[in-house]
Length: 309
Image 1 (cartoon, rainbow, N blue to C red):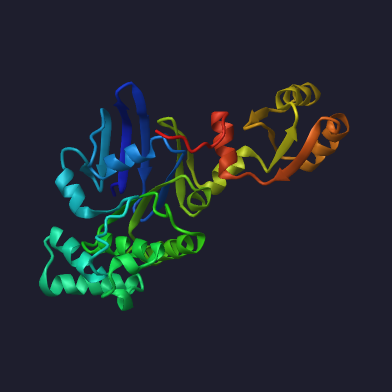
Image 2 (cartoon, rainbow, N blue to C red; image 1 turned 180 degrees about the vertical axis):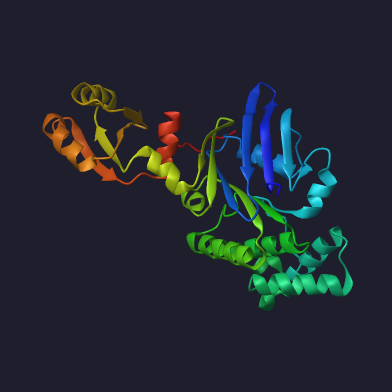
């Protein structure tokens, strides 16, 4: 069986800026795959390529076995796309928006009505069908966007920052909607995000930074690679503290965003060993379990900044 998405050695430039640099990854059928990274990392560029909106300078992308460049028309017929920016007409009702979307895919009459009813029921929007979009909350509007993408029953759904602009409650509701969709249809989901909590919910993630795929795997497996614990220290002179720790113990120590970080498997024991030597220089210290941000920091040597492209 083909992978749902197969990206091989893809590179792309915008003038002098390298947006993607030799990206290779696969998304399995029925999987939820997340592309995690800061703004400017290359997520949206790859998203546009998966949607057949942008052609790579080098490499190949296949979606459901079809070449996303040479067979773009066939790919578009089998994928659904939810963009970061709203694509609804706020002055029309939910039903009118869905009808217009269905017409774009050649649906009409009873078949279209049945698809709309099915999508509205799945997203619990049947009672809002005659409401104008402009009166709906952000979370409900995002559900309507999802309904639009489902009308032609796509095998792969691709999202760009699916919960951007939503409050925490609406985000949880949207993820519940995706879980319902996967259970009902077994749809493959691929999404971009810079929210760690969203990436945690994916089956696997690929972490992008400055156009490169720096890590890939399940969230739990990637965090285990960091270690069991992460010590974070705050000091007036972080660089001097780093040198002091490295002289005292044979450990990898990083200074990230003004904080000293040590990834280890024995946080409490190490702190007990270091504290007598460092207590005059340290203002605060914590021990925590690793996060995906710690994975990013360990792989890149810098913080997870939301940089502008």
